[in-house]
Image (cartoon, rainbow, N blue to C red; front, side, top):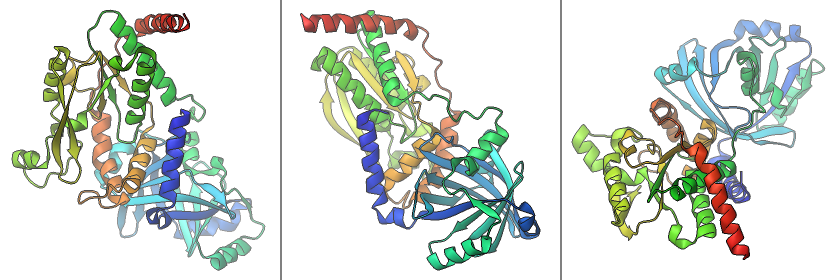
Length: 420
């Protein structure tokens, strides 16, 4: 993560943490590990089975994201929960929690593919839970309440039968899921940063151009919140700094080619709710516009208006040697004839969804479709993420690996020219 990205992310976190939306969704808990498991054994009789608590996230991600199935007496309950990494203060672990009910079909989509924990959960008193994990000898006790009197009462009742592990990542359910149901939990696996990713993409773009192409079109596929805008701005700034304003990449989003609610409902029926379906975006028209751009014709810029839910046309954009197409469908087969390179953003799924939900509040994007963070999370889990994961993306471009050395030489020559 670059310094600029860190500063922007910290600003977003600070803005969100000051909002009423955050205050009403923050949880405060203390966690303990039982040193005498037999003391709590009798609670298994009143415990509710959580068949699988499935983690779509990784402990190294900025957010934790899970789905789970509760086998309650009245029937199974399926939920999705998003949490940030929070912090320990005043003896409690404080963090954001956004939770929503989901369909059984959505739960089943993730249940077999991601790490999980199975457990029995007993709730012997208000604000007190005891979890018996499959594969873990000792139960984990949580006190989750903002009532200081009740919290102190529970602590005193626990006595000497526990050791406190509040904030210890090793005892987070997410970490246990990766340890218990992944042979090699990749907690310390290096994930390419957006800075490294940006540098790699830029060098391959430049290498392709100086090898003889008139126009280099690069597709950047990623979910909302994955950092597409951050990467495109960084590439633009780097290329302008090295080669001048005339080489500034044009940026186009597949979102700009949204067909609009009126057309979608007239064509497929109302109300239209599948906002991340490939039918929403006219990638064929985008391909035609990019082909005309390479021939020297200007691009008519457009954007999607979230209030009217329709496309609005803006000003003309003159051709450039570089074009960046970013969006959910930047890897669309319709763009294959005009696309030179394609990359997928390295940002984790949970981080992308967490940032997207947080941005709904920060940028005041709540609307009739997604009025709350919970409604947005529900849509992401049930519709957007499955659609994203099931799309067929282009294979990596084999020529691009040999383009980076060419770009390195170009940068070397540029540096030598500057010094002279």
